[in-house]
Length: 101
Image (cartoon, rainbow, N blue to C red; front, side):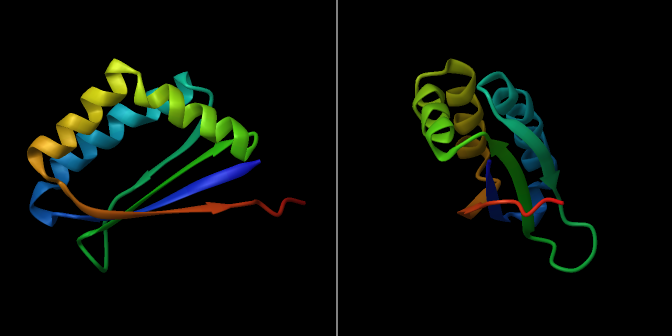
């Protein structure tokens, strides 16, 4: 299993728009073969940092997701939504592997 960790720098004045964007992606990742673990929005501390976590069975499965996502109209609409309202300033993507009991 591989987990994608996204760290977003967001516009704190567009938190509602970012939350709408996040809600678009959860079912899309699931539909395209991943398991979404949710988005984590600012509550205390920094008001411009958010996170997302989602997993795939393997890095190869994630790569298939990326290919399918590039051609999916709903995914493209979600990207366009964030681009049009500029709620995301930047993001970083990391891949993690779990250590389970």
